[in-house]
Image (cartoon, rainbow, N blue to C red; front, side, top):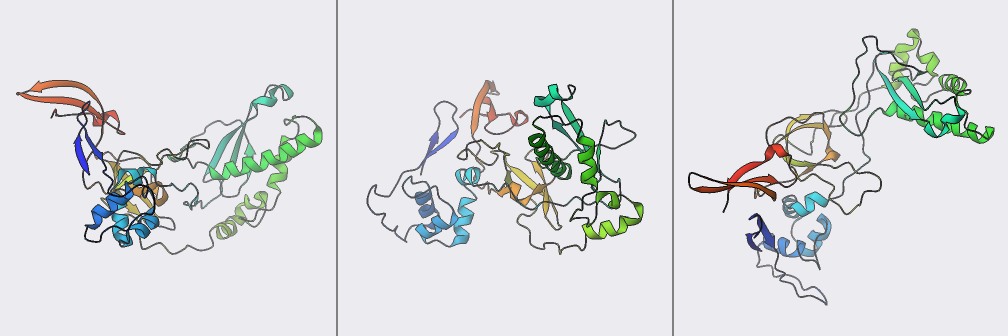
Length: 336
């Protein structure tokens, strides 16, 4: 591996010199070389590399533990490794009727002309009984909160899906998109419909005398908490980038910025608290699938741009923005 400085920004750059012949069968590498050299030459070779853990282990015959350690130290691998989108998350735990409601807006703009110019439908659901209320909502000392992740109000979103499925069936039957006349009946039908999770209808579940039974039906028993954790305190990690449906799959899936684990929260699903390298706590908790280990052993950071230069006490310095990091990390470094 050859190292040098970029002629424009003076940042460290690397160029990999291939030691393999191009074309034909790939010959086994000599075992006299150090494992790290074999891994570097194989992984960064366009003909053999940029692969996953198992494939790299198969090509190099190096123990899987060493392969994992090597890959967790590589920007290329940790930035582009696949990120899981579907995984188990924490349940919404509620103990009483009306303890927590979820609300959401259903957009009905395309059909406003057929519905007295109504463009939105505000839906509200009691997370405990699943009792749904269509509402024009006014706050009476109600505490409002939102989650920090892309996974928001799953219960009301599931209700909206059910409601819209019934609406569109009615639209097909009616031959129009008039929903203001049928909404009350659809909601009434939902509230009288048997739910598997609560093992009764929402109307029955909303009665105070059924509260204990509903809680038992929703949360029959607690699962054992995990004793093994994927990450530990002070581990350095990257966080996943939430992608839209049509985002390109070959673009990086993980943040360039590096964070540290500050706390482990055991439970049915383990979550983690993290902070950035300026020791600022990041709001919210993260699932294991939202984090990937990155061992920044080289402590190398890429410079995105040079913002200004100065000479201080005879030493030339430059004020730089670090690639992938917010502006608060901009800093002065020696211009050498």
